[in-house]
Every structure is written in C-alpha cells, then in structure tokens.
Image (tube, rainbow, N blue to C red; front, side, top):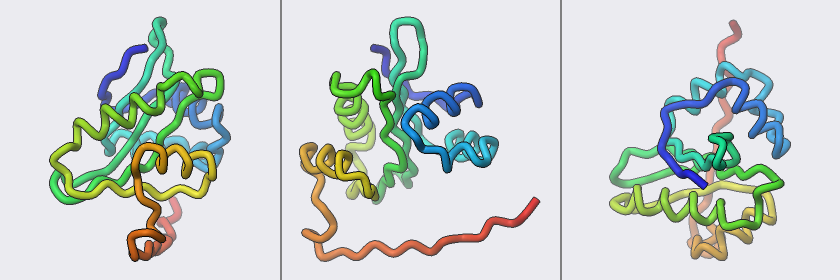
Length: 138
C-alpha cells in the first residue's frame, strides 16, 4: 500500500471511492466535491497498481485545530489496517495542532475513533453546533 499526500483527485476517482462507500451526497455536485477536496489536506492510500482505495481529508489552520472531514476505505480493503494507517500518518503530520475534531454519525466509525483514543464529545462537555448554508444557485 502506498500512502501519499495529494492535491486533488480525478472525477472518476471521486465517483469510485465515494460511491463505493455509499456517500452519494458527495456525488450530487461532483465538481463542487472536487473543489472541496482540492482545498483540503488529502492523504491517500493506493494499491500496488496506483488505484485509489482510501483517503483521509481534513481542513486545518495548522496550529490550533484540524477538522477531519472524511476517512474512507473501499469495502473490499477494510479491516486491513488502512484506515488506522491513514489516521496515524495524518496525526503525525498534524502533531503540532492542539485539537483534532471529528464529527460522525456512523456507529462503526464512532467505535473506530474511540479505539484510536478519540474522546466522544459527550465526555468533553462540548456541544457541536452546525449552521447549514444555502449555496447560491448557479
């Protein structure tokens, strides 16, 4: 497995990876998703043939906070340590950042992050707020 920081993904790679794990909301406006990925810090996992099999993506000021947006591994590559390696390498890259924040509603991913020593917010007395935006119509 090859792990590397990249600046973006092709539309084909986005469709295959995000569609492969059922994240279809990312595929509704694939161009917007590609731009978002390009403006994130992106660490990928690629197999021996160079095919994308997983990624971790985050947004950070590089000092005080990192928001992990996505941690994805194709189903046929899951449970092989790829997700843990992506998270470990991301954690090392951002070791100077004071706080890493992850928001997820999937029970399996919650267990994954708990096993990686992340603390559920209900144990930290922090409340997460989200203000949805209505993007301008084109």
